[in-house]
Every structure is written in structure tokens, then in C-alpha cells.
Image (cartoon, rainbow, N blue to C red):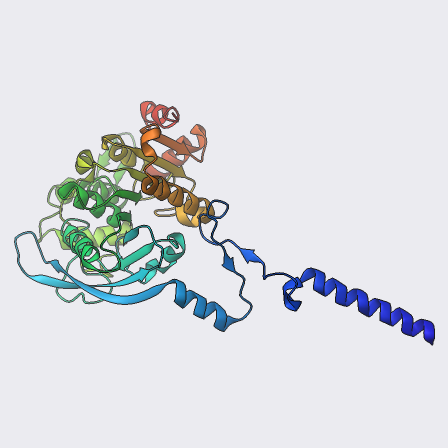
Length: 390
């Protein structure tokens, strides 16, 4: 009996010792362990205490990040003095070094973009609805980037006047239509942003519509005669911005090209970011999927080539339009954070002015493009992608 008690006593002592060894802060021997969160782990000295209960976690979040609904007013059109209300969400952090203005894509809205709060966790963040998207849409039309420029100008004016963001640099992040609008807005007012991060912008509305019509009204192959364009295709392309032709055009694009204008009232107006890119005067980080079904790699590269200043292009294995973030979210976050920190630290002057990084081999890129778009990539384009790694 005595031996059994001794054995139980020894085992109990070992268990207590093991618990204290594993969790020494529970008895005051050491401080609670610290863990780094956010995109700067291993670089920043700041850590965040591990929290064990939900209430503590919630209170810590409230102390480190404030959120408020905001409203600002945008010009209705280029030739109008009418103003329309745009709704947004402003997230501010006590030690933020910059504010990120997020510009969403077609048929998206500020709520859909909530995931980007993780991507830009060290910075202030403004999410807002483009016209005809999200809240307050009555009487509004999406123009795929043309009139949306006024929404961006109004958002920047709001950040410059807000007491929590007025003294910080503004960096623009946009994808698809949002990226196009960012290019157009910066080309119009070169003082808007300190830098741009652009994911999958299209080259022009003409190019976007033409590719949609290729899928909707492609060529017909007649045996022994050859391939011919389906009648009406050239007419729809030529008069794509005519208000009487647009209902027919949008119906075709909805049925065959995945551009569903029934979700957002739409009236395409011509924008050409491929040309506006020539007027950019700030650093630009491009991100693009090699399997993008709306914007082929060669179309994106034309925009990239026209940017005259510091630029980067990261081609990823994302499986669809705006798919890079979901293909490799950890690397995406690090790429974006690395670019922003270089801008804020003003270290880009020490680096080469351009660089292209491709996640896939040359053969994989050529095969994917041919499968998606039924024509081969020009060898000069592929050569440029795989030689610009200075």
C-alpha cells in the first residue's frame, strides 16, 4: 500500500512539474508567450499577446482597430454638377503608416472585400461602393471605369480631409474594374496616390467587349469553305457604347461571356488604361493570373509596358480572373506588404526599375494561353516575360 502511494505521489509530482514547465506563466514564473501576427512577422519587433478567451480577444481588437461607416459625395458625371452619395467603411489603426484605398471589381461591393482587411492589417483601410454597386444605387449606372473615376477622386478627397487619415500617404489597391479606374484616376490627377497595386486590370473596354463577343459570337467553321465571322459581331463591337445597341450587346455578354449586367445596371463607356498607363508617375505593382478568362497575359503586358516608372509584374497560377489571392494567399500577402514597405521606406530608388516574376514555366504559360484564347502568345512577349528579371 505504501509503495502504491509513493508511486501515485511521484506521478502526480511529475504531472504538476510538466504543467508548470509547459505553462510557466500560469504560476507567475515567466510572462505569457508572445506571437507575431500580420505580414511583418520576423521583421517587426512588435508582438501580440496570446489570448485565451473570446472576450479578451474582442476587446484587444477594439483597442487596436476602429471601424466606422462613412459617406462621401461623388460627381455624377463629367458634365454634371449633381452629386451622388457613396457609402464606405473606414478602418483605422493607431500606428498605421499609410491608408489603403480599396477599389473593387464589377458586380462586387465593399462588403465582399472584407477579406482584404487581413491583407492590409497594419494600415488604415477605406472600403467603398462604386456607383451602381452596394448601397444607394437608385438611378445609377456602372460605366466599367469611366464615370467611376469621380468616385475615386471623391474617396481620396474624403481621406485627405478626415482627421485620422489626412496626414498619411494613400496607396491605391484595385482589381479588375477597380484597377482600371485607379489607372484612369491617377492619370487624370497625378497627385492622388503614392503608389498603386493593380490586380488583373483589362486593357480597354473595346478589348474586353471584343473578347466577350469572341466567346458569344465566335467564328463558324463551314466544311470545305473555311471560317467566317457570325453576322452582327462587327456591328456590335463598333456601336458598343450606343445606348440603343447596348441592351443587345449586354444580353450576349451575359449569356456567353459571364458579364452579368442584370446584377448591376450597366452602360459601358470607353476607357483605355493601356494608353492612360503612359501618364502614371508613381510605382506600380501588377498582379495577374496566367489563366485569367477575361484578360489574357498579352493584354496585361501591354499596360505594363506603357508604365514609364518603377514597376513590378507578378504572374501567378491563379485559375481565374482575380484568382491570385485565392491561389496563394500567404505569398500574395507578403508580396503586397513587401511592395508597400519599400514605398514607405523610400527604398525603391536603389532597385532596378522593372521586374517580372512568373510562377509558371514558359511551356505552361504558352499552353494555358492557347487553351484559354485559341491563339498562341507572340514569342517576343514570352521572351520579355522570361528575360526581365534584372
